[in-house]
Amino acid sequence: MAKKKVKKSQKKSVPIQKRTIPIKQITSRYNSRRALKDLILFSLLAIISFILFTVSGNTLYQDTFYLLAILFGFIAVAFLIVFLVIVFAREKVKQK
Image (tube, rainbow, N blue to C red; front, top):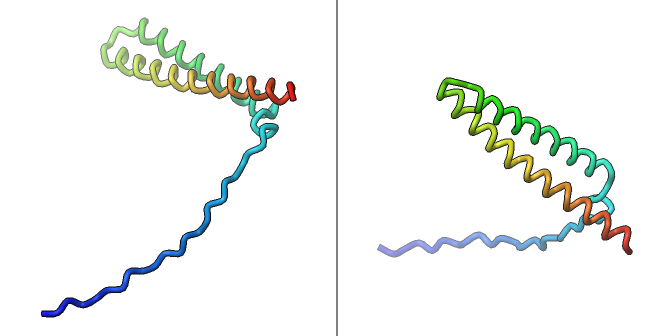
């Protein structure tokens, strides 16, 4: 039996335009204040979870608070990195 030829659909390639974000938009005061507020919030949540981990007697609660402390700690470190990037980018803009 002869095989039927199937035409492959030809996709038109659409050129991808790179969108550049201006440095002033990254280093705005709103972004730095928000990153600082989130950093403080998640740091406090991590500390509170660690304190509850040490105080609680039940192993289920200990495991839960330990995982929450680790999770909030990683998020706080991420916001610390974001805040430092904003601060250093702002200093770079001021130097120009």
